[in-house]
Length: 350
Image 1: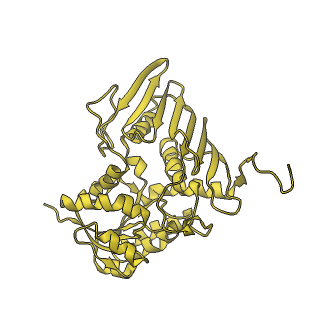
Image 2: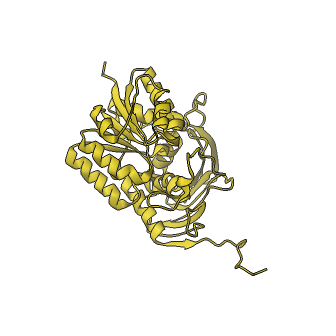
Image 3: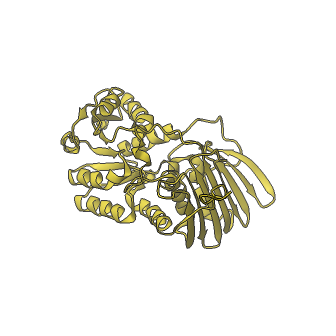
């Protein structure tokens, strides 16, 4: 039996408490991993995180994390620290599992990749939606040409912001703090690039007005495919993706990580229920496949770490694969314009 994977975590805020703590506790329970250290500038937060695990201890610095000799360091801090902390971890002899986004821009992402190559270490990225059975099925169907040439894609997601942030610092427009584009947009745009390749053109608008954006719209072209993305942090949206090709269509609701709707030509196949397994060669079946097994974000987080522990790294997202979505976000930021907001009127106007 293999020794448990030695894991350390840097950043014990919301994502660590909501997703990584239960995932790591599950891996500790079955002997797959053991958490050896946790660091956060807020020592109380780090201690609270450790209290949910068997052997984890809070340490006072990133150097102390590396000194605990973990096999892998989970970077779950604010994105503006990802590059610095990842470079330190790989230089210290550790692999890294970095929460999305990999970095705040392409240049930092490339530095992380280069540092890992120099150190002979691996950096993986928590682009967790790529692990969903539904998104994997869409990838296979689109890339195989089963739907013909993709002509249009609509992505409309979001809802009232409810993430348990610890301070208003999260909303300050400083380097590395982003709004809905960096948050939901990283997931959405990564899926589009994974499914369709690099966009040939894009236009971007948001409502930032000097702060961080709560709403944005992105119009992209991927060759002949015209794509509309609408993201929001302040009003409930359908959370639905629809892809239409020459010969068929797919519709996917974000909450149904193991289900999608599919039709070919004039035939509606209906709902497909997909096996919740991290197997890149698992083909979707037509029609229901057994009872539905819940496989939400929590299960996908745990599955990523379990795949890392078992050496099944082919199902994970390598840092190099995460660079293209940083390109797209860089382009959005460079081409930012203000969204039409007809409810806003100049001072003094009636």
